[in-house]
Length: 97
Image (cartoon, rainbow, N blue to C red):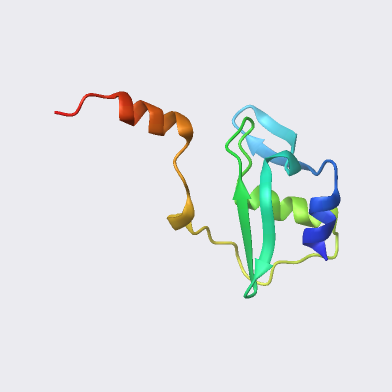
């Protein structure tokens, strides 16, 4: 299975076009959790540099398992995105008017 191949890989190199040109980075380092539930791919990603996006993980799944094909376009459910610790600290230290 593609998820198992991805998670057991030490590195999963992917490429993305940026303003500065084509950039290659390791998509595996940002993935905290990755699983399939109810025919949906669920992932938890760390916010780091370079930023790994959900579409980078899909590309990484294809790298780790070349026979992997998504059955429909990826959509991101931002409902479950958590604020970073930095933004929590900044908002708690700002004065309340």
